Amino acid sequence: MKTSLRHVGIVVRDLEKAIKFWENNFGFEVRLNQIEKGSFIENLLNMPGVCVQTVKMSCSEETEIELLKFDSASLDENWDGNVDKIGLTHIALNVVNLDKILSNLLKDGYSPFQNPQISENGILRVCYIEVLEGLLLELVERITE
Image (cartoon, rainbow, N blue to C red; front, side, top):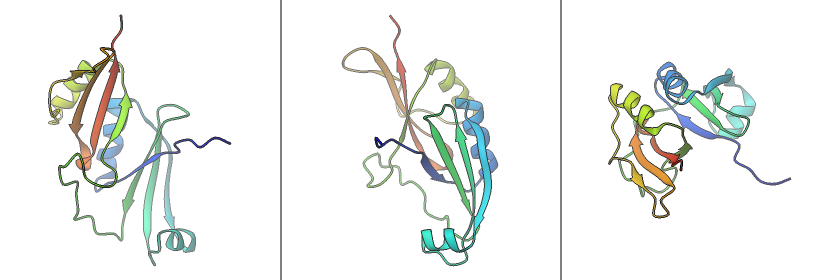
Protein backbone atom coordinates (compact mmCIF):
# COMPACT_ATOMS: atom_id res chain seq x y z
CA MET A 1 0.00 0.00 0.00
CA LYS A 2 1.29 3.46 -0.95
CA THR A 3 1.24 6.28 1.54
CA SER A 4 -1.28 8.99 0.72
CA LEU A 5 -2.74 12.07 2.33
CA ARG A 6 -5.82 11.12 4.38
CA HIS A 7 -7.07 14.56 5.41
CA VAL A 8 -6.09 17.96 6.77
CA GLY A 9 -7.44 18.70 10.26
CA ILE A 10 -8.44 22.23 11.24
CA VAL A 11 -9.53 23.19 14.76
CA VAL A 12 -12.23 25.86 14.56
CA ARG A 13 -14.16 28.10 16.95
CA ASP A 14 -17.29 28.48 14.77
CA LEU A 15 -18.13 25.13 13.18
CA GLU A 16 -21.19 26.27 11.22
CA LYS A 17 -19.29 29.19 9.70
CA ALA A 18 -16.42 26.86 8.76
CA ILE A 19 -18.77 24.35 7.11
CA LYS A 20 -20.43 27.10 5.05
CA PHE A 21 -17.01 28.51 4.07
CA TRP A 22 -15.84 25.19 2.59
CA GLU A 23 -19.23 24.43 0.99
CA ASN A 24 -19.85 27.84 -0.58
CA ASN A 25 -16.34 28.66 -1.80
CA PHE A 26 -14.88 25.29 -2.79
CA GLY A 27 -17.75 22.83 -3.20
CA PHE A 28 -16.89 20.58 -0.24
CA GLU A 29 -19.76 18.48 1.16
CA VAL A 30 -20.25 17.12 4.67
CA ARG A 31 -19.54 13.40 4.61
CA LEU A 32 -19.58 12.76 8.37
CA ASN A 33 -20.65 14.84 11.38
CA GLN A 34 -20.12 13.18 14.75
CA ILE A 35 -19.43 13.79 18.43
CA GLU A 36 -16.35 11.96 19.70
CA LYS A 37 -15.97 11.27 23.42
CA GLY A 38 -15.00 8.40 25.66
CA SER A 39 -11.90 6.33 26.26
CA PHE A 40 -10.73 6.00 22.64
CA ILE A 41 -10.50 9.74 21.93
CA GLU A 42 -9.36 10.52 25.49
CA ASN A 43 -6.47 8.05 25.17
CA LEU A 44 -5.66 9.01 21.58
CA LEU A 45 -5.34 12.71 22.43
CA ASN A 46 -4.20 12.21 26.03
CA MET A 47 -7.02 14.54 27.11
CA PRO A 48 -9.21 13.10 29.90
CA GLY A 49 -12.85 14.16 29.50
CA VAL A 50 -12.38 15.52 25.97
CA CYS A 51 -15.41 15.97 23.74
CA VAL A 52 -14.96 17.03 20.13
CA GLN A 53 -17.37 17.44 17.24
CA THR A 54 -15.73 16.17 14.06
CA VAL A 55 -16.99 17.10 10.60
CA LYS A 56 -15.37 15.45 7.59
CA MET A 57 -15.90 17.24 4.30
CA SER A 58 -14.82 16.19 0.84
CA CYS A 59 -14.88 17.47 -2.72
CA SER A 60 -13.53 14.23 -4.21
CA GLU A 61 -12.52 10.79 -3.01
CA GLU A 62 -8.93 12.00 -2.61
CA THR A 63 -9.51 15.39 -0.96
CA GLU A 64 -10.84 15.71 2.58
CA ILE A 65 -10.91 18.42 5.24
CA GLU A 66 -11.59 17.51 8.87
CA LEU A 67 -13.06 20.30 10.98
CA LEU A 68 -12.72 19.86 14.75
CA LYS A 69 -14.69 21.80 17.39
CA PHE A 70 -13.48 21.02 20.92
CA ASP A 71 -15.87 21.63 23.80
CA SER A 72 -13.13 21.21 26.38
CA ALA A 73 -10.08 22.84 24.79
CA SER A 74 -8.80 26.40 25.06
CA LEU A 75 -8.87 28.06 21.66
CA ASP A 76 -7.15 31.31 22.58
CA GLU A 77 -4.18 30.69 20.29
CA ASN A 78 -4.45 31.62 16.62
CA TRP A 79 -2.19 31.65 13.59
CA ASP A 80 0.44 34.35 14.21
CA GLY A 81 0.58 35.64 10.64
CA ASN A 82 3.97 34.18 9.74
CA VAL A 83 4.09 32.02 6.63
CA ASP A 84 7.29 30.36 7.90
CA LYS A 85 5.79 29.30 11.25
CA ILE A 86 6.83 25.82 12.32
CA GLY A 87 3.93 23.38 12.02
CA LEU A 88 0.95 23.54 9.68
CA THR A 89 1.34 26.73 7.66
CA HIS A 90 -1.15 26.36 4.83
CA ILE A 91 -3.37 24.16 2.71
CA ALA A 92 -2.91 24.26 -1.07
CA LEU A 93 -5.96 23.78 -3.25
CA ASN A 94 -6.08 23.26 -7.00
CA VAL A 95 -8.92 25.51 -8.17
CA VAL A 96 -10.78 26.39 -11.34
CA ASN A 97 -11.67 30.05 -11.98
CA LEU A 98 -9.42 31.68 -9.39
CA ASP A 99 -10.80 35.14 -10.18
CA LYS A 100 -14.37 34.09 -9.31
CA ILE A 101 -13.23 32.45 -6.07
CA LEU A 102 -11.26 35.56 -5.08
CA SER A 103 -14.23 37.77 -5.92
CA ASN A 104 -16.47 35.71 -3.62
CA LEU A 105 -13.85 35.72 -0.85
CA LEU A 106 -13.42 39.50 -1.17
CA LYS A 107 -17.19 39.93 -0.71
CA ASP A 108 -16.86 37.97 2.55
CA GLY A 109 -14.06 40.25 3.76
CA TYR A 110 -11.02 38.11 2.95
CA SER A 111 -8.19 39.45 0.80
CA PRO A 112 -5.10 37.85 -0.72
CA PHE A 113 -1.58 38.83 0.33
CA GLN A 114 -0.91 39.97 -3.25
CA ASN A 115 -2.60 39.68 -6.60
CA PRO A 116 -2.23 36.20 -8.13
CA GLN A 117 1.32 35.56 -9.33
CA ILE A 118 2.36 33.61 -12.43
CA SER A 119 4.71 30.72 -11.66
CA GLU A 120 8.21 30.83 -13.15
CA ASN A 121 7.28 28.13 -15.68
CA GLY A 122 4.26 30.21 -16.74
CA ILE A 123 1.64 27.50 -16.23
CA LEU A 124 0.14 28.40 -12.84
CA ARG A 125 -1.52 31.39 -11.18
CA VAL A 126 -0.98 31.29 -7.43
CA CYS A 127 -1.98 33.39 -4.43
CA TYR A 128 -2.02 33.13 -0.65
CA ILE A 129 -4.98 34.28 1.40
CA GLU A 130 -5.67 34.19 5.13
CA VAL A 131 -9.22 32.96 5.67
CA LEU A 132 -11.48 31.48 8.31
CA GLU A 133 -9.94 30.81 11.74
CA GLY A 134 -6.60 32.25 10.59
CA LEU A 135 -6.04 29.45 8.08
CA LEU A 136 -3.70 30.27 5.21
CA LEU A 137 -4.77 28.93 1.81
CA GLU A 138 -2.60 28.67 -1.27
CA LEU A 139 -4.93 28.78 -4.27
CA VAL A 140 -3.45 27.34 -7.47
CA GLU A 141 -5.02 27.60 -10.92
CA ARG A 142 -3.55 25.99 -14.03
CA ILE A 143 -3.41 28.50 -16.89
CA THR A 144 -5.17 27.14 -19.95
CA GLU A 145 -3.54 27.55 -23.32
